[in-house]
Image 1: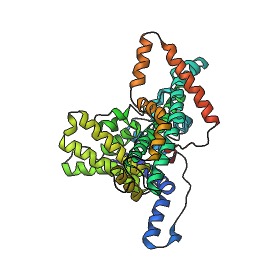
Image 2: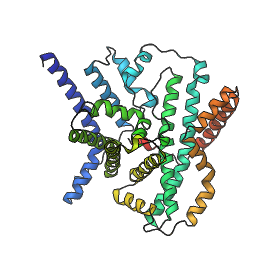
Image 3: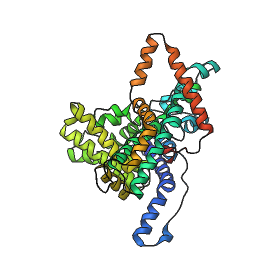
Image 4: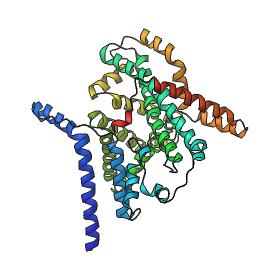
Length: 397
């Protein structure tokens, strides 16, 4: 290694250590101090630090730029162009994680107009994202809160526990994909083309397929900057297992400073290890789809829970332990109030509506989708004005 290469690697190391240290201090120091306080019995060790909104997203975005500069894939002589890339507001706080080379042309020379702002795909995409978040995710959140509180403070029914778990699966999808759609839509309005972040993950044929469709920008980030540099699957079996474990440990830690996120990542590590070593998911069928949804739902129970004990208690309730019965009055009343929106959410999580609108467009009936968009926009505005409950899940990351 010549002197120039050592110099470049030293700067890469210093920059990445600095970025990771900032992320560690703001996001994980409180978690570490609380665990040390519990272990030593000394509450004076607890350090409380406010978490900057979206710190994981813009830190990973900056790290991707540094890695790409080192490998020769990205570089700019303009400080202002780099500052614009890092602070680009539509996707700054909740993704998708955009790499410099994905928008380098738009940073240098982009074209936008007021007509494109209103009538292009950007506004359409933004409205769909707004509807996902305000009309569906927030509605599912109320079901989720009720179900998880029921398991925590009283004896729930099996069906209510499953209903809450499925509702959370829909809530987190519409929350995060809705924000991604709004970011992509806003980007298009201003002449930027951000990468897609979701591709109907709940129709996946396997857990491996799920992670090619869910939070695509994060999955590809860990693949390109962690998994492949560690050797990927081009190494011995034990080393490959360690590489896979490292990726999913880091993925869990990235999502938050809580043991529940680490367990969530470990569940996916085991599921992917099982798929890749047995090969049973290589021939997709109904069973592999059910397997995938079960892993996703059960993993998200721990993702949603405040601690592992609560997550375990909720999981046991789903399978009939410490419950009041199969179904009770709270579940029945909740179903009666929410079945219509719940059904729309289930359909919206699949390509069904998109295929219907493509078919209508082929029949020159685009006005039906435009009417649908207008309805979503108006309802969303009314909802935003009256909003008293607005949990943004991924703002925590």
